[in-house]
Each structure stands twice: as C-alpha cells, then as structure tokens.
Length: 162
Image (cartoon, rainbow, N blue to C red):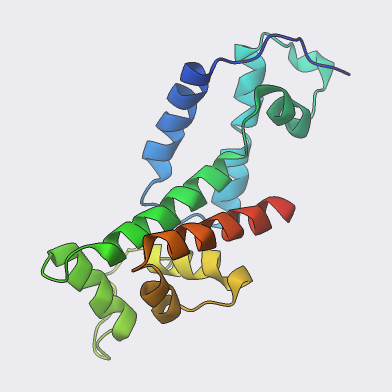
C-alpha cells in the first residue's frame, strides 16, 4: 500500500517530536520505554488522515514523512548534551559533577530509595557500547567538537542499521 502524496510539514514534525523530546530529554530509555516511544508513529496516521484499517507499517509512515524513529532523536540529543557538558569550563558545576561521576563514584555512595537504577550516565554508556567506548574515553573525545560530532554521527548510523 502506498501512502498519500501529502506529507507532514517540517514545522509540524518539529512541533510533534519536540514534545516527545522534552519528555525524554533527561530520561534514560530502557527497551520497554523505547517501544512505547516508537508507538507514537501510529499518531502520524491521524495527522496524515489515514484510517487504522489500512494497516500501514511504521516503516512506511516514517519513509513518507521523512521522520526517523523518535528513539534515535532522543539518543542523538543525549549524546550531544554529553559532548556539550564535556566542553564546558571545568569551573562550572555541571562539568565538575559529571567529571566526578565518570572518574569514580565514592564507594559509600548509594542511590536514594525509590530512585531508578538506570541513570543518565548508564544510558550514555549503553549508547556508546556499539562504538566500543567507555565513559572516560568518550569524555576525552568529547572535548573536541568535530571529533565528537563524527562519533555521534557514527553512533546514529549504527543505531539506524540495527
């Protein structure tokens, strides 16, 4: 089945994915959460005025609208934020806090009760696994903007091939 020739405009796409991005920006995404985010693609059917009875696949909707899966957007922005913090001045609090967590968490430190065990840094580590990087290596490479952008592009390319 082919989709109608009219597609979602770029401002509409940015508005739609922007809301999801604000929701997921600092959240670490587990596989379950990733599946929930990917179901948002079915909302494109409403925007494109395609009835659910047509049984159009998510891949076909993405191809027609020109949108990538929202989980890719979240991963991309998370890696970009990591690089941004790594390039900040060492005197700034967020740079020092992240650097301290990457170096070594104090042995007597525990996460507070009822806090998720999957942290933002663990999500970054999971994003870097296909590249065979650890957090310390990524921290060093992120200090150079061009090199980090190349790494982020490579990570997103590998993620789209999975």
